[in-house]
Image (tube, rainbow, N blue to C red; front, top):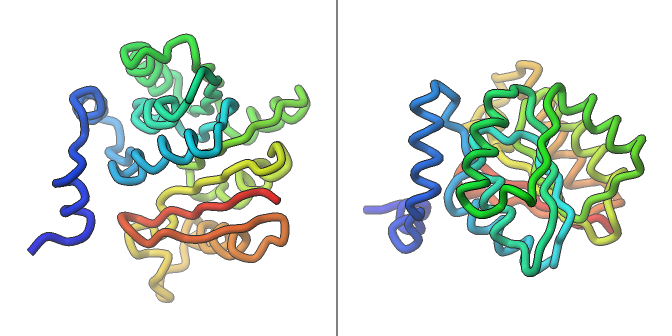
Length: 209
């Protein structure tokens, strides 16, 4: 019997470009941690529904989520993607260009917190955030997302279950505790309206009031 995720992927299979991105990630020895296909489609829908045109992505990897985010643009927009490793950003850029979004994305290389400080100093604001990077800094990424948010901005945080480790009280490593803190903050922060989606590895969603 199929589980919910398998049934979803049977109905909504990934297209050739997204499968190519996954193959390139594997071929380059990069971690296979792209956003789940079902959540990738959800990102496209949310960008379109919210009419977002200024997106901030924290964690580019091979460009899978970047493509999904840009596919949601209704009539143009700009994706700013923060990536620690230049080689990851280069691969992501090539895939975004192949998808037709080469001119719509700006990559900033280096620690994301440094890039976020720069964006804040520049007075930049965004109306959609996708957080999918190092888990230890998730609480700080959330705070920056709120501070740099335009009214009504959407925040999405991926991998909030850490493949079950977040749910296990016997696991208490620094990254696990950071994600638990992120989950608790996004659920209770009075500046947000939020929910949690339990499929795949979990996705936290919030709207800035």
